[in-house]
Amino acid sequence: MDSDELDSTHTPFGITSLRHAFPFLSQSKSAPLTKAQRTAYALRRRFMAFSTVLSVGLCCGVHPLVAQTSHSVPAVIAAADSFPTNDTRDVLIAALRFLIPRTLESHSAHDFSVWGLDGLTAIDPSITIQEDPAPQPHGASNTEKSAPEMALSVLRGQTILFQRVIPAENNIQAWAALVADALHAGWHASEAIQQNGADALLQSFFDELFNHLDPYSRYLAPSFANNDRQKRVGHDGSIGVTLENSGHNVVISAINANGPAWEAGLDIGQRILSVDGHSTRSQPAEHIQTLLEGDTGTDVALVTSGSGRNHNSVTLTRASVPPETVFLSHSGRYPVLKITSFSSETAEEMSQYLSQLLPPDDDITPHKGHSHSIPGLILDLRGDRGGVVQQAVTTAALFLDHGIAVTTHGRYPQANHIWAVQGGDMTQGAPIVILVDGQTASASEILASALADHRRAVVVGSETLGKGLTQVIGQMPNGGELFVTWSRNQAPLGWPLQGLGVMPQICTSLGGTSLDDQIKALEHGHSLMENALHTARATRAPVSVSKILSIRNQCPAALGSDNDMEIAAAVLGSPQLYSTALTAIPDENSAPLH
Image (cartoon, rainbow, N blue to C red):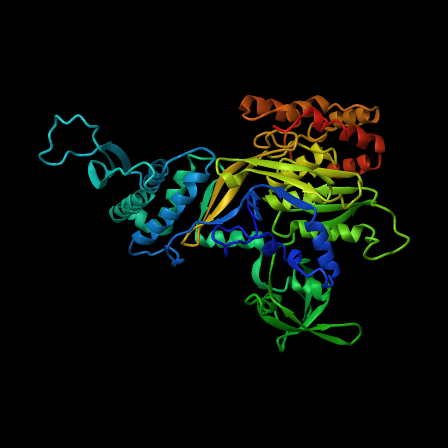
């Protein structure tokens, strides 16, 4: 997943305050905190973003903003028998206002509009777009020396379907009106465009526009945008359980740690006997699942199986439940925390699992007989395509005492940030190995590079994808969304993530012989990857394609394998291997941030 963030659409520009985003911070000091609240507060005080504006939802990447218009949200543009010119114009006004100041490179309303109008041709190749000198008004003098006005024309063959004098370069209202009318003209002249529909025409407009930018900027139509939002922040009205049938019974097969069912203490394998008084016996699990869903804030009454023949009654309040993204397993004596993506609650999930794995905080819950730390930890980021930047930074804060996690750089002032962390390593310095592969991308690359550059973790695997661009989300008046790349990500040692990706300290993609040689070298106190690591870390943007390929070929991107986990356990089990691999990364004082 390339996107995800906190829902902040209730504020003018989608940026919530710190106390709105982190409600525990506004709680009275005298109010007693629950264990979950103490854990959340301990997590949140570890995170600090140095920037002129608080960014509670950057993602790697996206950051949610609402493109403002003077209109309320209309129905989705999808009329089959007419073209919704006015609604289309409103979307275009919002889009141009959003795009012009935020793209990595400067472009005008003229550029975006002309690029997008090629969407007519993409659907109906007989339609073309031209810019020519405007026809002279009747009776105008040919001796006038002023530059002729230019006109934009939509043609089919030699027939002019639409023509208008080109407005000023960044006259957003005029360009939006021109484009909407041009699309309208193409719609009426082309059966192919009408058959595709108005939604498809708007999609084609944005597809052609974004073809001129980077691979990650895009437009999502309303239905797709809604699905994407649910992936980032959760579905409305759920208690956070998955059900299955077992004979005549309906039982809980999974519980989301972010949901009401988890907090209520429901267990996997527990039978659901009734929902709001309706018996579940012999009912399909899918049907009972729908009974559990409803509007956020509404209650649902359950009767569940207890010990023996006892039944338990519980009333839960439905909530928006973010998807689970962190999963705990073990490889021998070492806990493995698998992160599948970075959603709005990933760092919270990670904190909860670490709290389970680590000894209790003696200041809160004194307890004797616990070891001081875990023997080691494996973070599995293989296949993790990314998510919310802020969540990757906050996760890094759980393992770092202080320092920069990532910096972001763009044209728009709010795109420029130094993401710094402070507050303390929850694991108290326990050895960490991070598993990556060629599908590790975006926010997961931020986490891996942050811990590696601070010599806090050994990265094992192959070169990662190299998606070092952050997108900002603009919510359009039709319910669609624009994902627009607005910043480049830079690792703590100053090298660009875009294109390069993260070079691992131990490369598993060069074959068994190479891996054996690397392990033997580490046992003898030196790293065969050191030169490649120093070259990658010393690289500064802009980087040529040839140099990127040269660096990446030192450890080609590949899919992860079971062997990665074995190597991770071996590294954690050998202080010599771990220490030598850790220090193969340049010292931060020798590679200052640029």
